[in-house]
Image 1: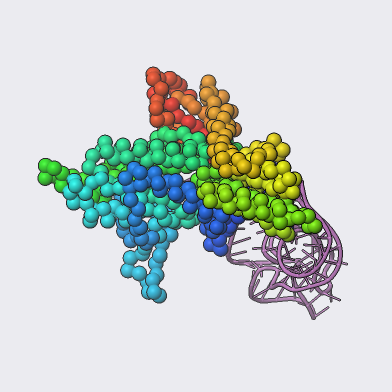
Image 2 (image 1 turned 90 degrees about the vertical axis):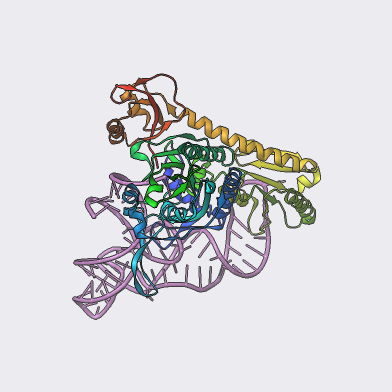
Length: 479
RNA sequence: CGGGGUGUAGCGCAGUUGGCAGCGCACCGCGUUUGGGACGCGGGGGUCGGCGGUUCGAGUCCGCCCACCCCGACCA
């Protein structure tokens, strides 16, 4: 029954990550190369994340719909940059019902094209705008190197696609949704992110401007955790999305798209996890509290179980996602490790001693060992659990923020930059040339993650070439 | 697609000069246990990646093929 221990996180981050995903039963490898199966525990986590995101999308005026998986190949040829970006990683259906198809169908790698096609049918008037639609689905990209949750051939996500009457409105939408992602990352999954604008070489295929939120993983590498794109009229022109404005003149729409994926689960693992296993933020944890009754044969177990059952029912009735682990084939010690591996934020132990004293033991997942354990009165249990879960959520964000900030450096020259990006991020001036950007990548593997959104006043010298620079950017190695 | 590696039970592996296919964990049963990964006894489970060759006999030797993993180029 005893699972082997995880590899050490510090010395072997990649292996630690892989085994954690498998052992915590978040996901498993599928028979098709590069594909994953999201297991019930992982999917419940995703559902809780979806709920937090979906609520925010609706609050900002969006509605959900479902567009088809299969897209005519010709759609990808309508926008030059888009086809160049996605053609190499398309999966294509060539046969149906035993017959070779007249036109091959691409399995969607993203839905700008099919949604653009539909928008051109639906949008006729300025009164139809803005059109704000999101869909939850999976997409397929034939990736060369895959890693569970971080990069798989098929992954689950949401993609929002909006059409607007003016450039300003569309641009505002792009930034609004980036803020929504920032808010979700910070408050729901306790991951501090840095938002900014992508450079030319890093932006989405076909976008005029790409923005993203970047998070620092436990090994200090960066993970692009959410993106929001502004297309201007590029896609509208490719797909003929036009409307009659108030002056009875035909205008092309301005469009956006934005998405986050199950990759965020990878971020949660890599930001919060430790040698014991997962550490899930209480707001999205499938199980927030696990209750372990301590029973001994011969003792009066009924008393322990009576208290345990009452605590369980009380907390459940109060909306806490609680699990009772009363398996009699496993010892308490085994159960502690079992649920710690799975990242349950809070554990309650109830044994004969607690029944006697009218107390229970609570153990915080975010504070390992004895320090995280405390005795609380049974009478206060509901209040205490809510308070502690909220405190765990806060301290997880705080800890992640401290770690991130401690690993962001301000190198004084190029030599220093090369040093710091080996194990951290660099915040530096950049002249804006793609040559300097490419040189850093060549020398260090680090790329410009984002151009910071709220630029400081004034200017400096490019960390690479020394020329005048007006933009501060983050350099980091990334997943 | 280049470089490196691995394919034997669900997982991790051993298998010597070619000679009855094994070990640990997991799984099933019974009993004893249970406040930080319990133990005893008894079980079930195999197309040794595939195809071909050498041989009385191949997990083992030879050839071809396939799959997967790691490192690069590409990517949310």
